[in-house]
Length: 266
Length: 250
Ligand SMILES: Nc1ncnc2c1ncn2[C@@H]1O[C@H](COP(=O)(O)OP(=O)(O)O)[C@@H](O)[C@H]1O
Ligand SMILES: [Mg+2]
Image (cartoon, rainbow over all chains, first blue to last red; front, side, top):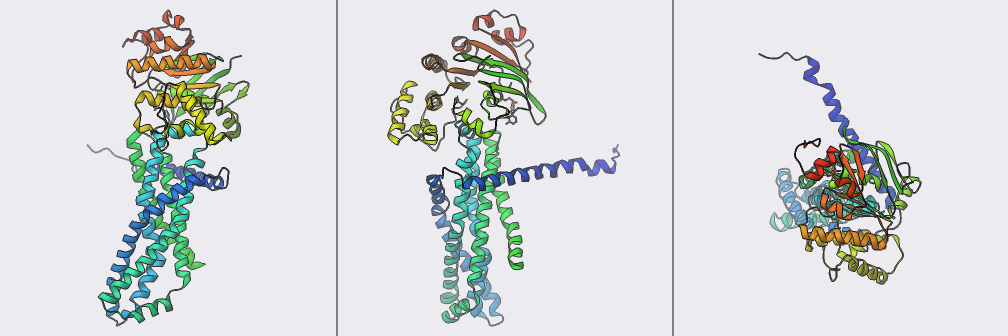
């Protein structure tokens, strides 16, 4: 026999309240911790050695995957835009359109997603492991602030390195586009570069670099925060890593829309 | 007045009470063993003493300073007087043994690298280790890791050293060895030692006094002999390793 349920039971407002309440609490906690990270960034001692280690890990060791993804993104964009633009006889625009898309959107977004996959995940896993094996507590008992020691160098390094990786992406993306458009598809090289110089402004590039700086901060802070708050042994570290990466990717994609809208409004 | 006085300490996690009014005195220069069933809140208790956790209620007074009311800066100073050996050593696995042991010295003193290295070698010798400075924690056995953890805890010449289950996960011979080490280091340096344990035999051999934590409270504090002859049914069940009794496994 079916049990009658009242609308209140079906809608379960208190469960929804709890669900959103927990998320709001986490968001508040995250915001407070990031405020601390910003404050502690300017607090002595400056851990330059740790910062350089992280810059090397995030920046130097990511260059190859950025090279690869950038080149192929530029190449495929040339193919796609050529198909569309050939219908209107405006093949000459292939370069300009591709470069605009790369510098404004694809460069910052794809670079950030790749770095999230590589370094954001590593941050969540490493800090998560340190949390569940009490290494974070050990830092604390030795009177060292774990946020200052662990989070600040990672987040600062990611914020600093992302624009450089994005410049690399933009550069090889443009080259990839050129090699498909000009030698393979027969676009006139003079037209290709002429239209780029005519239509692409330095502002397009700077806008992309600004976005990637913000994404660098976000991906590292989300990865670090999730790892730092991990609990429950190896399984907890696994969950923290997955959630850190997924949250960071979603934040980058959603944040990209709002940042772009904001930049257009300004 | 005792060196460290814990009074009415309450702590719950997500509505689940773990500590329900702990009262405990820690005497200076002595070894206090906190004995209790796995998961009864021993680690939680000592994390309050060292200021890693804040209680819901209660006070911890050390040398007249209330650690619960102290601000973070004050706590940082207090923490430098503590050394802690964690249950699984909690060595920094990205650092070598020497870097682990010298960590606090590098952070809090202006000693040169050479001086730090000399202290590191001395501390490692004190715990019976030689020639492992450049190894990473992953390359050490469980017993060696605990020793390195102890050397790290001793690096800043602390007044109080806390040992969280120093012998758990070790074989009986290595355990006896670590017990011996704790005893000799404690005597030699005149440390105040707090040892968390669920191992009755080891508590008898190292403790000046033994406190039994049960259901969030200290139910008995006695000398090892006092514990042996105690008529408290909780103590009896724990000491005699019986299944039946007031201690229920949930
Ligand atoms: N940070 C925490 N958050 C939630 N629960 C915790 C936390 N730390 C400990 N607990 C819970 O408190 C209880 C006691 O844990 P613990 O002190 O580690 O036991 P033990 O006596 O074996 O050291 C356990 O049930 C544990 O799950
Ligand atoms: Mg424990």
